[in-house]
Image (cartoon, chains in turn brown, orange):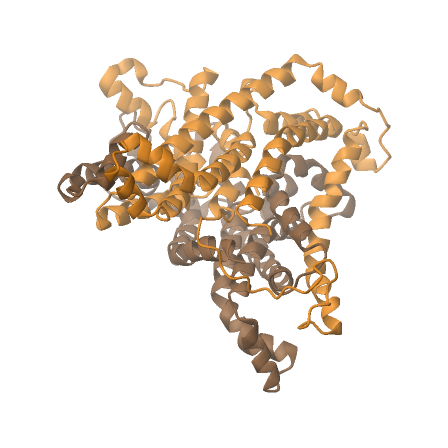
Length: 293
Length: 336
């Protein structure tokens, strides 16, 4: 959809090399704004539909602007069965997975960033490969294994899966920050009488904190958004995570779109806020973090 | 974890830049840990202790189940074996010969490849164009566009799928209303999913929309690394726009471009949630891609072994792409 709105490479390229590009720039700005509208439209539709009165939602003639705004959809969404338990499940699973993942990832990142050891390269490769395995390929054996271990319908099964799935990214990102902390800092702290742990706690950890924050928010968003494993590994209605709970708005008789959009807004809101917060850090993490070393 | 989740996180993509001084102290012998002057005796074991938890976790969730996948695909595991814990009978290559001899498997594979190819091509083309456009925008327009991209990027997969389901709803969907206004009333009540071609058009729209932000932001980062002076010098020397792009811009962004393309191939090959939710949790056979096919064989026909065998074939099909991705990473120095 954006293809038609964007200029061809040839068109755009010309402008960089021309000294008079200030004068012709507004064309691009218009195209840029159109692209922005196209990309943001589904998000707009989500928000506007969640605030629309129900008679407009169930209308055969949809309008781009709502005639009035209401919080009825939100009220219906929140009153839907298992809302509170779904919030609880999502929080328990995501937060535990993130905390566990960060501890393990930091240890591994320190090892990879600070030491040259046999198998270091292999470990990095494994981490990258793990990210590429199709989730459906892992789903069935993990399901069978958790079934054998009594981990179906239990939070811990899901927690372990999420923890590991965010591990590769977290390790690589934190490693980028580790590598940028001069070894000398740590050494001088140890010369001044710190133990290795003390040096880590007082010197390295504070410097790692931004990296940890960025990686953990990423991991949190990942776990918060995951759907497939949550759907398969948890069958107990009262343990559904929010994404699986979303399906309860669709019944045999149809879909309550107003409430579905309101519920979706509630689920997306924390993610959007987090994303806005980490935007800058993410850019740093992606470029400096991942590349240096 | 799922395609779109990975998308949200976005794996680190190297951006070309000047080589950094290597801060890791290299020991004289790389194969002999602890022989470096700075690492004392206990340093030899320390790195292994540090990576141990990660290794254990990955082994538990990936290595062990993956080996189990291989084993299961040579057995015949059904619901009975799953619940009783009885050892499933060995059937050798039967699962594979059954699957490969099934014409449905081939039509599913063909559909998956075509769907992936369309999504990746459109995503990369649109992504590159938007990234190049971003280089030429006034600052405030660029900020607005970035904000919109980030907003789209941060939509959870299930939320995005709900939105698109609503937009394409046959009775109350905006798409039908808008088309009806232009084309005529006939479009009201049009069901996009009766014809899989149209259905997949909507699904592709969702997949492409969800993937573009990551592609644009990564390619934009790469484009900012292209030296302006080089482009200008080339233009002064008489190179036309196409030539400047081919000989100056493209070589710089190519590593990142191929990397993102490779990742898109892997992600779009494994699309699951988008189809799943747009088809109301019960995708018809004509909407099955390899991931859904494996899933339905395993959980609906409760032939877990058939499901794992299909998953395994998918892994093999993708492994070529994965190896290529790794080689690219090594070239750009990501894995050193």
